[in-house]
Amino acid sequence: MVIDLDGRIFRATENSQSGDVGEGTLFHYHQDGTTVWANYNGGAIVRGHLIATLGPDGTLDMRYHHLNTSADLMTGTCTSRIEALADGSYRLHEDWQWTCGEKKRGNSVLEQVEPERLSLLHELGDVDSGAMDASASDLQAAV
Image (cartoon, rainbow, N blue to C red; front, top):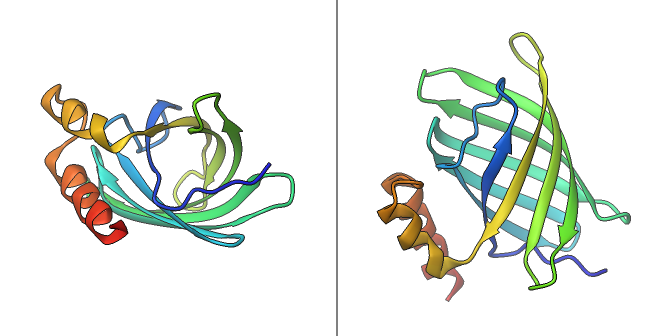
């Protein structure tokens, strides 16, 4: 299976209680070969970044850091299993652990969001305007 995450946008649909990411957080993915990176913000995240390698088995081995709305700098590691859906989109199943604080572990599920759905999510209050602004910038850069 060829995996192409470049230009795709994801949002969390599930997360453990000890995680900062929520439904209002958008992840803007980029990929060059087996190198994958993303910027993320929204909800409890002011600004975050991740970098990962894509393994031959289709998993991502990543490191991340972000600043949350409580002004805490947070860091962690994550392994993501990529699920290809019938419509051509992806779902990420994540097992993560903080490398700071209490070093808690958790699980998340991220779903790909099509660009045309972003304004609807914003209208429903599910995505904040900061995350939307980042989405608009990423979309313009991709064109």
